[in-house]
Amino acid sequence: MNTDSRLLFTGINSGDDKSKKVIGAEGVRFQMSDGRWLIDGSNTGGALGHKHPAIVEAIRKAAEAPVVNEGWLWVDREEAARELVETAFGDDLDWVGAVRFFLSGSEANDLALSLAQSITGRQTLATRERAYHGMTGLSRDMTVQPQWHGGLSSLTGGFRPVPPSAHVVQVPGPGRYRFGETSSTPITELLSGVPEALSETAAVIVDYTQGGVYYDSDYQDELARHAKAAGALWIADEVVTGLGRNGGWFAYQNGKTKPDIVTLGKHVGGGGAPAGAVVVSRELLERMDGWTWQTYSTFRGHPLTIAAVRATIATMASTDLVNRAYAMDDLISARMAVIAAKHPSVLRIGGRGMHWTVEVQGPDWREWRGDSAVPPLATRIAARAADAGALIGTSGEQTSVFISPALVMPEGDLHSLLDALDHGLTLADEELDRNSVR
Ligand SMILES: Cc1ncc(COP(=O)(O)O)c(C=O)c1O
Image (cartoon, rainbow, N blue to C red):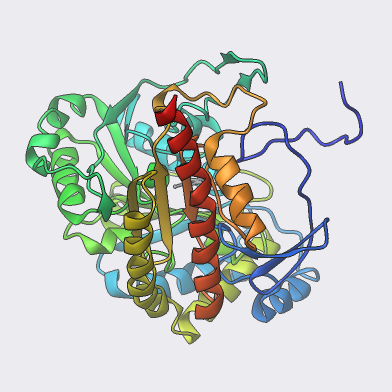
């Protein structure tokens, strides 16, 4: 047992390497304990970069706010809900109903899923394969990436998962990628088994980045149609994509159909405070008329959260960052096309706007439980990319890396980040070479 640190540590890069520590940050860069300043290329919680002046100012002021729990009506919290609705859902005012604030994306999903169970009187929940929806309660049940089983993984092999608290159905993902291996199966055929799978289901929850699976409007509309026919609610998990990352306010807006619930986290707090939100449709709000939602928590919608949310929305409204993320899709996809062609190890690349995933050849992701002290391939790719000056992310998967740069990242730094990714992938090429020689 090592007691050098008293922190019960977890890492999104598997293994037990704790050598790299962050000691500071500025703009789009982390300062590391070894003295390096690295471009921060995978920070889904920091879409405005570090120390954004509007967020810093808001958080400073919030330190003087009253200590008000969720049970008190508080004018600033009401204003935050109004601003989120009117600004972010400005194109969907006919759709949007009301907002409740939470502490994280995990909590927002957990509570949205339980709300769906209560409304429908059903227990079963559905998600698409390879999804990640969080790590608490029902959101953990719906996280079906096998390494995030919520329990203990042994550094010498083996794992102890947590028993699920709901029956979980997995529906196929769209299987269509921007570069590399992609599926040509028509969506109707792909989802042909879904009506039966959803027949006893309270809700189907879909996100737009995890496992390298991005939005696909045909897929969304077909799945939404099946959910409606089955009497299941459709929850759009926009914890990563909400407020701009995919190049629109929300990813679901790329399809024709509208969800019953949208969940938010990460960027909704601008990186300045823990934050999440559940946004229910007007139609669902009407179904809840005459009922109270009997759930409460002391620090939900805390003054720090509310200040961070309001500053984030104001910043997003007064800048062109949503359109910028849309425009950056061209820059990044042009670079990804070259990367896909150059590296024999690359299996497929998916992405939209300013979130992209590269999956390389290697062990099957379905078999991975994070139960090894040896850093997996993705972690080693990220380490080599760091040698070239940027941090890329891994989501804990063994063969996938992703980039999720701050929406404010200058083009020059974005190119440097992609250069670093390109450099990191040389390690996967070498590994592929070695394995094919054997
Ligand atoms: C799609 C998605 N949903 C939910 C979550 C959970 O959010 P949090 O980690 O803030 O609880 C994540 C986190 O990575 C996510 O990617």
